[in-house]
Length: 138
Image (cartoon, rainbow, N blue to C red):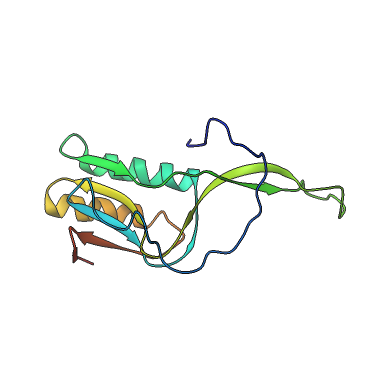
């Protein structure tokens, strides 16, 4: 599971996700990429599920790059706890995603790469699309 080794602060504010990504929005490494078309949070477990799905599809015939990292802690209070008494402990790590952000990249045969990224997109809570070095595929 992905998580930062250490952070400056243990807890962060949630904040809002608005606008589009200005960085990390081009295909840099592979031939095909999975781009977010909505704003949202992607958890470390969801990133891992996508990684497994892509690796199972492309096996040893291609390469994959993960372009996001979950570096934001989300805290939760225990169940059946009364209001107050401070903020809860960090429970999960998420990657804040803005529209246009490149999530995963794959270098493989055309059909295999598109199928792998489509499988990965089904594991995510946000809408995505597959692009090929500047050309929209699906």
